[in-house]
Length: 140
Image 1 (cartoon, rainbow, N blue to C red):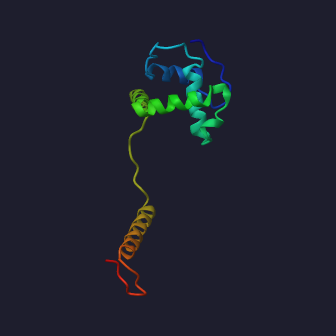
Image 2: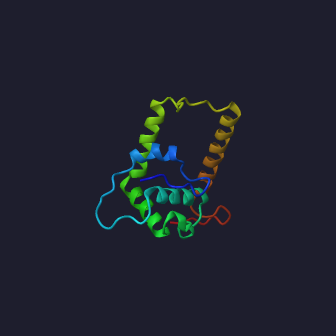
Image 3: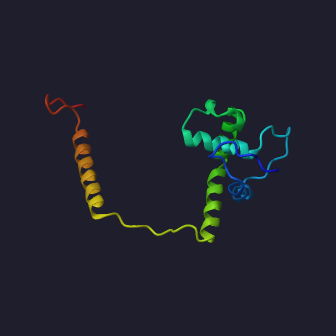
């Protein structure tokens, strides 16, 4: 398909689409021809995820909201999004664009998290008691 005019500043560029398109599943070819391109639908999905708006608020330039949602949900159920992510990460890793090293947390942050964990443990012990401390009543 020919290049689609980028209608909004956050839509996929031609270079981004060229990197993404080979990892998309092949079209089934069954049924009637699609009314909207996959690029439009994926841009609609990206718009909805980025804004957090309801699916019904997806702009019409990306296709009918139910079509955009249907593609998102179908690919989610089939695990296609995870496969696309893994494939794109593998390509970026092969090109040396990903640094997989993990940095250590600063000492203060580590100490703070231990304090939080201890306080959660204390609260958990208090709330696990049956009955009320004041009245002394206990649940069976």
